[in-house]
Length: 483
Image (tube, rainbow, N blue to C red; front, side, top):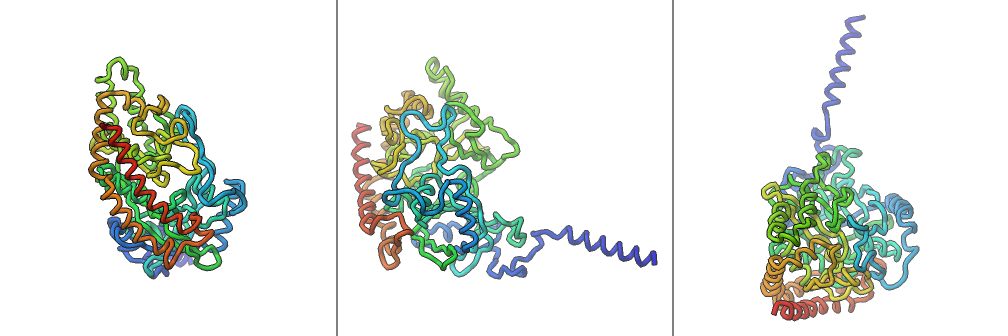
């Protein structure tokens, strides 16, 4: 009897040992009921497929099944965060409202930081996502954004900004461990809030990259969402690559250095203003601390050459001056100098120099922010001359005050305007984008009321014409500035 009991016990322990060693890595997704799963489309051991996810000559479409239960959970969470249910507050035309901040002083005080209209990130819920007939399983879906989300939510517009994370629920569903979308773990979906042309996000990110400034890739995408009552067409979005997912590795050739998404003016260092997107456990902020220390050193006025040398040891100044020249040429109402957000930083191991990465361009490429308040000094975007920018934006003011850096900045303004931002080139690009998305905005499959920020069809065509006019007017402004 003892031998039989011992054998049974040993058998149980062996079974338990084998079972404990079985992990999600051992699960065959196709045998777990995930029949559309392939290594190329869903696996994490493939390089990101930019041609499929971010095509230049076609518009993708995705279908998202949210379910009534998950939509209810999102609404409950947003009531707690925003203080109101969907469609129960806000007045005026879609896309109206106000931006936080503005004036000479950046919001958030000395360390910086933007004002969160909706505090904290909304919850993730699991959804089914389909693309080209294939399904991705239990994908993490959450709303995102600040003024864009607040206004859409208040006005009851279903064209909501959101984010997708493909393995968010892998702990709950081990069979989707390391699920990817053609090599991408995350994607950001921008609905064209305050951009009736629906193309500024893509236009500007492409412009930055063409001029040598790394920026996330993007593409146009038709979005259909089932909120629990069948699929609804939610219009044309811009699908945007997430910086700390694939963009840094793809465009810098490495990703081991620190990646930050700050909300800082660079007047002083506050750890909470430099959100780490990787290397969180190391908690090493030496790279950005060195930049802030060198930037604000008193030798800036007593020994400018030494100040420049010290700053360039920790910060890619030349890169920032080129970024600044582009940003000021195109006009951007929601960037550093206007608000202390909408940028990332990366410190490549190859150089050890903190490098600027621009982000979020729906309030760029326009001479007026419309109903928006905010912007730089006196409620305006930073000008080419930068004379209105005060010392509370030291990365602009101190570099602009230095004759050596100002000369470089002017040369980059001239180069960008004459090489990349000509009316001939930009009109061709704008027309290409118009022809691609117009059928799904005002054509055979138009955006619909409650699922669009457009007041009417003419708002779209007028905004496209205004983009072309903007390029022409900025060319005149550049010529007046550099003469």
